[in-house]
Image (tube, rainbow, N blue to C red; front, side, top):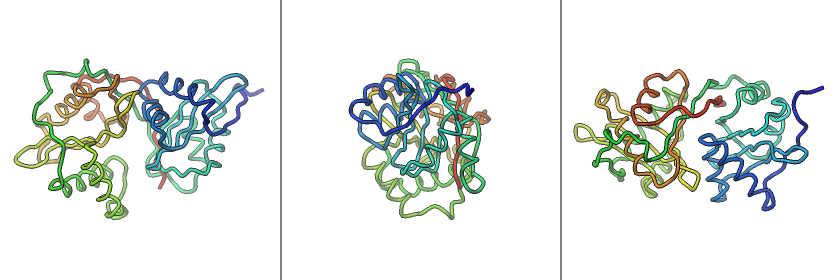
Length: 272
């Protein structure tokens, strides 16, 4: 007999939405993306239902990201098959290691990245206020080229994405959209951008920080710590969080100095 409960999956509808939002909020940092998306109507969500309760969620975001949340673990091979049959495309996934491994077995080719990932976060009041600065700013159009280079460099180092494979028009449009909607923050050093981060999700469940990058010539100045601490302290949401490779000791030390603490673990999968 299977040690996992039987389940079925179906898209979230108005009847199941309240339970889905409650499950995502209860998941803490890993559920922030999903809880915000459910509140704002972004992406598509499959509910994983047992006999009398919702067991988990599979959220497919508009940027090709997949988040799997489990309140009760189900058979990972069966859940991976459900995800692969879904009509919504994805390329980068976060979720339980067993589900991630099952997805790898179903996907063609070798993934670019498949590694343990950790979630950090804290409440705005818990930010390390000694590192908060008043000169953090929103970038403008003159900063576009620097932000594009930062994104390309970060993706190459962290996710093994060859810069030559990145669609420059898409990247420029993405950067321009962040400039327009004010979802990036930068700190300058030596008269130019020294460090940047993005606010990947901002809503009632919390704020997600993404894309923290310090240019090589500005490293060692504490810019990343100050930028993360400042963005956290100024957030108007109950929780500020991010995720990072479990073996990235340098980045983890930065986030801990900024006031964040380890909240959860998961697996990251990036398809080729």
